[in-house]
Structures are given as C-alpha cells and as structure tokens.
Length: 158
Image (cartoon, rainbow, N blue to C red; front, side, top):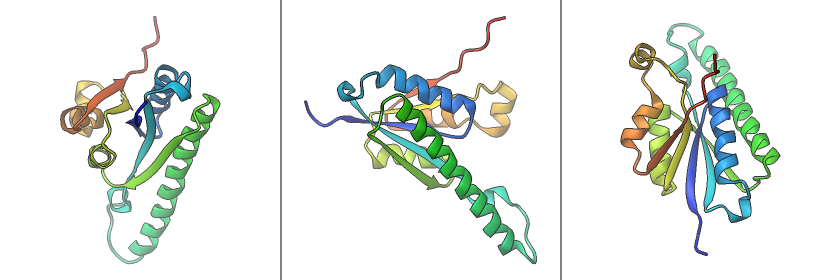
C-alpha cells in the first residue's frame, strides 16, 4: 500500500470540537493500522492583538500576559486532543499550533500538508450569530482545496 493520505482535523477548545474529534477517531481510525489516513491536528492560536484591543502605557506587559495565557490554553487544548487519541488507540498523530486567524491557518495547513480531507466540528450557531461572528467551517468549506467534513453534535432529543 502507498503512502497514507493526510486528514487535517481543525481543533478548537469547544465541546463540539472534541465531539467531532472523537467521531473522526471512531469512524476513520477504528483500527489505526488499517486506516487510509495520517491524522494531523491543527489548532489556530489567536494573536494577543486579536484578544487585547487597548493601547497605552503598560500595553506591552498586558500583551506578554495575554500571550502567555493563550500559549498555555493552546497547549492544554492540544494535550487534551492527544489524550483522546491515546484512549482511542491512535498514537501516530501529528499536532501543530499555528498563530493566526483560524480560517486562514486551516486553509493554509491544507495546502502545506497536501491534505485530501479536512475535518472539523460545528458550533451549531444560528443564522444571526454566524453572520456576526463568521463561521470558520463555512469559510473553510468554500476555500479549502480538499473535501471538507463538518461533524455536527446531535441535538438532544426532546
């Protein structure tokens, strides 16, 4: 068998994202040795300037604190995903934290790693929230140069 195709999983720190990762592991890596894919987990780390919108005396100290918090949170997110992979028996997983806007980071990673599939969770925003915040999954589905799978967490049955 030839080289495995690359599947990129775009991870954030939401429950929707971890649900989607677990779903991907269950459906595409039930037996990692026979999977057709090499899993690459990408986490987009926000820049301090996207989080802090103030300027003035002491701003550089604020940026240092914010950067430290962002770095710690990003590493915690990746560590949690690695642990989930490990519990599912998937050990050959590459992970990368890339700073920048999630939309650009994800689409650029697809190009860089020549991914054949991009998988991600959906936050399940309504039309208004999606219009205000912008949907990363919607953007990627239109701009990533590969197939895109958006895993939605089922709504609880009433």
